Image 1 (cartoon, rainbow, N blue to C red):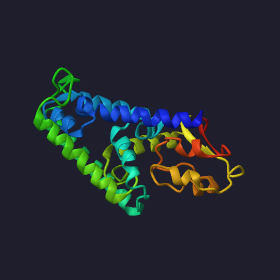
Image 2 (image 1 turned 180 degrees about the horizontal axis):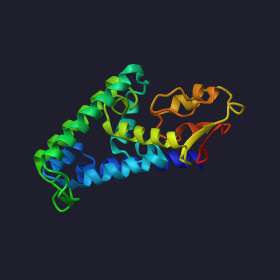
Image 3 (image 1 turned 90 degrees about the horizontal axis):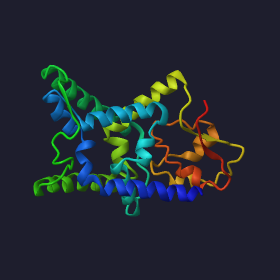
Image 4 (image 1 turned 60 degrees about the horizontal axis):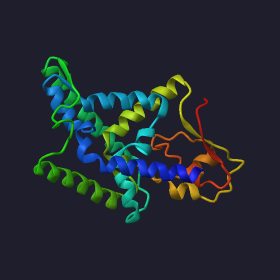
Length: 243
């Protein structure tokens, strides 16, 4: 049952990845920025708001189960499966996020605020990529992410660059501050045998075994994919909604 859960997760993110030519503009901060410069709330703005609100209950579930960029990087693990260096380099994405926030707020103020809503902004009948030149941009973007993942390690783009990750981390911090029930992983050190299978399969390259042993399962880089839970032979790691 649990391994079927991972098959379902990977099938879902693969499906979302293959749908990117149609849905790219709905997850693009560039389209969001273009919209705010005209005082328009785009589909991407609405999706980012929904994603943030979901993080108040589900943490970074989006990253582990729904993000096509993350799914694409997991496909790259067949070529490069080393964990990222982490450490201070993880702070880079916070700078990227601040940069985008400043740009969005500046353009929004220049436009005098939001005047209208257009979910399908900049699309053709709701489809993102319809022109040959747009596919060139598409391949450049994913080619860059592919190279970055190969060079940096497991989900390197998520660790170092992705501003959406920061948005979800902030949502998780808000939840942790108020301590309402939310999805998280629980670890039982008494059941853990120290086999390290959980750490090996973690797509974010986290030392999950150490997290279980120390009783500190909360980690800003955890995407709640449950790969660690599903590989554990002793069920020492489980999904939980309780505080």
